[in-house]
Image 1 (cartoon, rainbow, N blue to C red):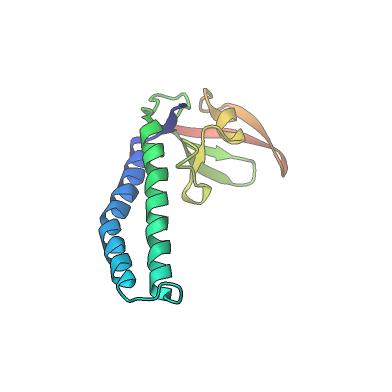
Image 2: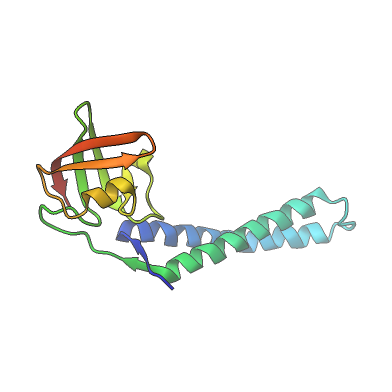
Length: 151
């Protein structure tokens, strides 16, 4: 099985989500038991909803367990070279952007985290302050100047 790269903070969020669903599961089981005791299951909306909720929780727990099992925490690269976990400040000639390079499972551009496997992430890896990178995306080709790198 391939290892899934995570920052320590990203893996902690996945573990917290697993713990949240693990804590919710006994209540979902109790709701399902209560719904079964109501009688006719074919027309029991409470039973159907309880069964769907428990099914969702169980599926999500299986998914999170697989991710945690395959997770590998990658330590941030220190210094002025961009690597996994680096916070990078860029300028495209019009405006500035700041991103942290993380694994694909924890990337969220709206929260200023991008995947190190994304086109921009791949272009930035190994670069230093002052370097120029060019990235081709579906919107076209964009050039960026690296303004700052921190761990």
